[in-house]
Image 1 (cartoon, rainbow, N blue to C red):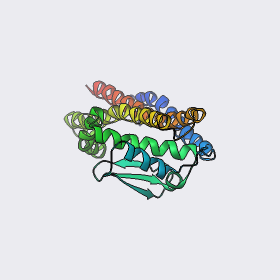
Image 2 (image 1 turned 30 degrees about the horizontal axis):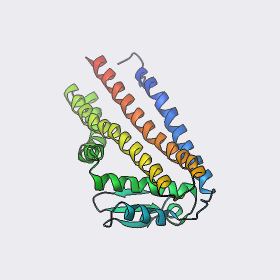
Image 3 (image 1 turned 45 degrees about the horizontal axis):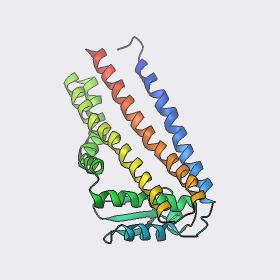
Image 4 (image 1 turned 135 degrees about the vertical axis):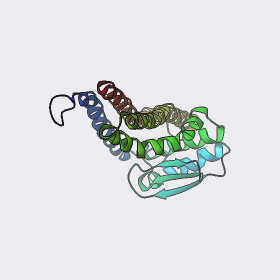
Length: 228
């Protein structure tokens, strides 16, 4: 297609996204490990902080569970489960408390009917189909018909929209976490900047994922236009 077998000049578009993604992953891991060693002055564990924040926000139907893995923490809105990794659940570090508070932020969003979260959740089926089926159609589009390529790109757009809507959801959860930690005096004022560093580093991974998805979409559109 471009004069040389297996040569795709549009791939250069992805290089900044790849570099950014590698940096984001390294940053979140190093920041988490750094503040995992910094104990909070009041000594509350992540599980205790999560339970307190849920109760103070009138949320009594969310169960807190401990799960395996590092940075495997998440909130499951379907089952109303707040799942915290062992380091976060049992730890009393700044990192543990910050991550636990962030995940509670998602539970609060769910309970309050936060609009961006509802939009993102509605896109989950589209994103799942898009991420699993898009590349099948895209590959077949190169081999069989541009019409299949178009279908693949449309499916991929669904996955991109999900990534884009993830950003306000994650930023808002972190904002809620910081506000709760400060207003409830769970940590001291001089510890707040450390929590912000932990959550800001985590946010980079979502920014990197979104940037990668958007650039990949641009690349696919360029390839599609060149095939025409």
